Length: 114
Length: 146
Image 1: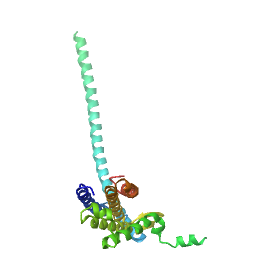
Image 2 (image 1 turned 135 degrees about the horizontal axis):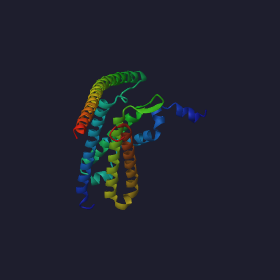
Image 3 (image 1 turned 180 degrees about the vertical axis):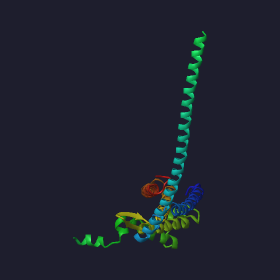
């Protein structure tokens, strides 16, 4: 047998060991991710699945209610801002009318004087 | 209905759903078990790897086959679809079988040279097939790879 084979053999065996460790680490991570993110693979009967889905649905409904409340508050703020904007527009328009009137009045006086 | 159809329909769902997978598991289990207990020893593994290498290889193959079997037997029919309940175990099994096959292919090539090409290619195909299945299953069920 060639002399270098035992040395390469140790490297191959070490790589195999590393691969085994990696496989078990991935397994632990997959189990954890499965537990944290989704429950759809943890049931063994339809009843169990139904219970899990009921819990998930309650969670989703709660999140939806929270989002609706947030949306409502944002809409309220938006309505208030629009109202203020309308008032400011009205004031601006009134001010513009007033400025135009004053300019006309000043122009008339100037014309008379000229 | 023919006798063969009746017989096949009596088999458990996990066998009917993945007969090839079950076949591979039952091919690997006796080999790895015999290797772990020392009944059968691969000459190539013993010549190329250090003294602890063949034992590690056979343990990896045995653990892989057991995990794969656990995953394959957890197939259930839920709302008209086949669901793998113990997917992490199935992925672990595929991973271990894949690296054990790759190691064996490399060892055979090192030990026998070109004359070991045919068995090496067979093991490489097993390694590649199990790798593709693992990556595909992981991609179908994980958010990262979807």
